[in-house]
Amino acid sequence: MSKKTNYSYIGIAFIILVFGIIFVPKIIDRVSEGDVIRDESRSINVLNSSVEGAKHNKSDLAYLEINGVSKKVPAFSFTNQDGKTITNEDYLGKVYVVEFFFTTCPTICPIMNRNLVDVQEDFKDFENFGVASFTISPEIDTPEVLKAYAEKYGVTNPNWNFMTGDEAVIYKLANEGFNLYIAKDDTAEGGFEHSGNFALIDKEGFIRSRVDDFGNPKIFYNGLISEAIGIDDDGITQEITILKEDIAKLLKE
Image: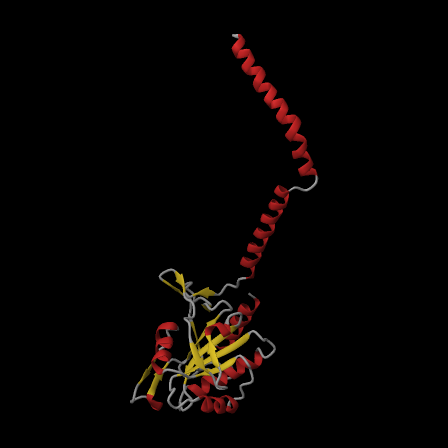
């Protein structure tokens, strides 16, 4: 072996020795005193625990998905029964039920709203529960008319807004935003066709529901049969009970 090679080994050994003398004690001190690396490790563990906790807090209620994307309530802005502007952002952080109705409805609307008052009473102690009722007859249903209607049905929840506004915007919100069918129809009683279903919205603004026997979201809740009646003449079972159960699940999320 040449002297040149020997000198190379000696040089490398010297560098390693110097590194050990200078840096190893510092590394030991940092570890013994609780260094940043250990703190970061703890932070990651806490973060992971928080994420896992958030997952565990989610209920078994499904999201309505369109093309693989969870459907969220579209932006809206209307005037309520008190003349105040209400938007979708006013409902963030709240669990709420959506309906489309009109005050002069001679058929299903009174049933729907009596059922919603029943739901209201079950959750009267929850400040983060609400209802969004959109009129499909805005020419007639002014804020004053909606106010009288709310009082007639015994609405006391401050988060229950009866809203009116531009007709075209309301119809688009119903048919495209919530997939709850509404249309003018001179042959129908009251002059309108509309769904008797309710939509359930979570605190983040997503449409949620339980799933059917095949694992598909039910999407909506039948609002036309009361708990007291139970089953109608056509053999259809009421869904107000499961609506209440699912509201309670979302309130815990």
